[in-house]
Length: 478
Figure 1 (cartoon, one colour):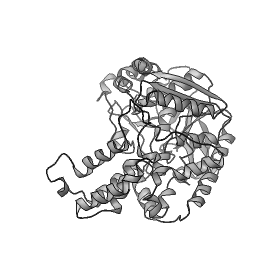
Figure 2 (tube, rainbow, N blue to C red):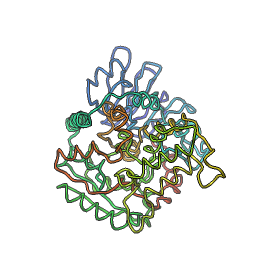
Figure 3 (tube, helix red, strand yellow):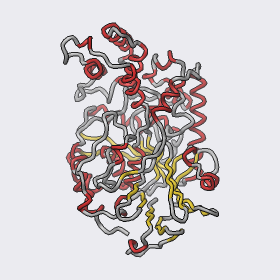
Figure 4 (tube, rainbow, N blue to C red):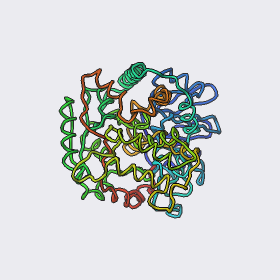
């Protein structure tokens, strides 16, 4: 899916087919398609879930489309970029050495003098939607930030109470996921899935049950042997699976072997990147079940923020008492614990509830903590940040040069649970009722008791990002 666009043809020094349009010169592989009209052309890759991609090229309406794609519009002298709403891809733009546009960072003109930092940080909400997260190691290169207003979209959806029946919403989401899976199968012959023991992954993989399923466990991890047991159960439910164990002791070595995208902020995804390479299936697209938690506001911390808005009170003590009373019977729900409980995992839902009160009410850390008060808008903003999409798919697509998708990355359904009547959202949202109802349609039982968040020591995967990628980034790659 690689391409590179610039106005300086002399940069292409290797044996490549260089195409041109107006002042632009560019290279592209066969997966990047070209549409040419009377006054502009478009380089694009990906698919639409609905609509005609040729019409999207003609009108350059990609920002309004629903699908998985990137597109670059070229006139004779200018350009415009579009990414799908869920940013399943990452594009880079720079103008220090002339305008350069690509989805493969090593194609850029990079010298050691361009290095301005040797580590990349993500924000406290683990979201790469802020401008700071578009930075690379190099001062002149940033990843493209599309113009979507995720915060306002979530806020608008939460202000509605459109759905009053969970069965109706389940059927709607199911039909959308079916049509999305049909669009993927129509466009790609070789489809594979990344499968874990969790409910998000199980729901998605059931729409592609006969395709290869890639599973892994990590050793050592907080879930210990329980995680491996649950992986085996998931494996038994699908006919075509590939499983391996990723060893912590190999973190540095695997970072050097597998990491291609030096701007990556989620190196913990490398086990999946490694498996794609090692299995050798050369898939056209891989399904990775991201954004189920965000779509259903299913995690403990976002739910506590929902309750903070429900019980917001000038009397902080009363507010905290109401939240604690409400959350107590919900601590066994699916989304209330981060990672599978085991002897190695000391974290329980209580651990995160206490952390929440320390963070938002300064409990245990400030004298007369009950006098500490956040504005209602601060709780709302934190909730809205947690409901924005995570961008794991673009980590895989950028690092492995492969299409990567998620059935949860669908503009028709992403905000629909937010539009449930308030008593549903404030009720047992953490117990994944809609996903469980979809599993029931396939007579599938997910036995994992909690979120499939695999907590482990990934430090060396992150610590060696710069040294693992700098030589390749500064090579002459075109």
